[in-house]
Image (cartoon, rainbow, N blue to C red):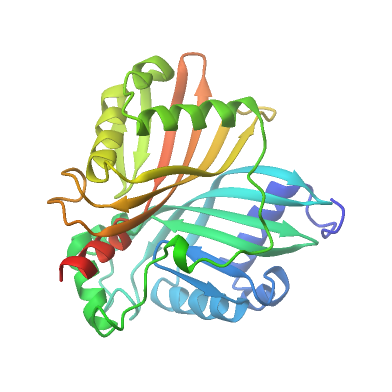
Length: 322
């Protein structure tokens, strides 16, 4: 790969390799090389700038979860080494809560949860990132309800007026990467399916999903069959019926020894004005940063992985309702 170290055979090898080097091999100082000095990192909970903040957050996480492992399930990517590449990296994380930190005193709880990180890389360096962690799964395994955790976090951060603001497009800063992915047919197909679901055309689910699908959703939830898919998506959309749905980034890929796949980063922006996954309508202005991966098979989508951060959504609602 032009501009990248010869130790990496291809882009997925680069993403998987540096992730292991940073976290499990304790090479935190390599972030000074692998991350650009002014990188914007967007997550549902905030937007931060610079690799110094990334190094600090990584150290804090390892202090709280010293045995954390990041198992790369897939890297779905687009672009070229010359123009830059965008990876959508799906990670299954395992960790034990052994130290003090953002989640409180150590509980000894063993955690398993997923993360999807969209990273733009060029010249052996990542310079733009979108990161979604299944915080709902994390806090539940530590004994919290996601809404209760959001309330507690607001109080610890000094109240509604002083707390860290969840990410919203109004506070975003344009980073080095402004691409939208690729035009592969599988990415286009999945984007169309999501648009139809979000337009209340739920008939697309039995038409385009394998009847034996397994879906992996926020909160560490695993649902089976097209009934499970319908249940997940309708409860999300019902909570924000007037919100604007947008495809932010779209990738499709066909690779040897793998099913056709797609990675979509999407958003819902608008009011919490319906009954659904987030309880009584509050009228709060909410931004949902979401990411989804799918694998296609002979009878339609056979696996779907979707993440958003329940605690950040609840935080936006609680900031409105008090």
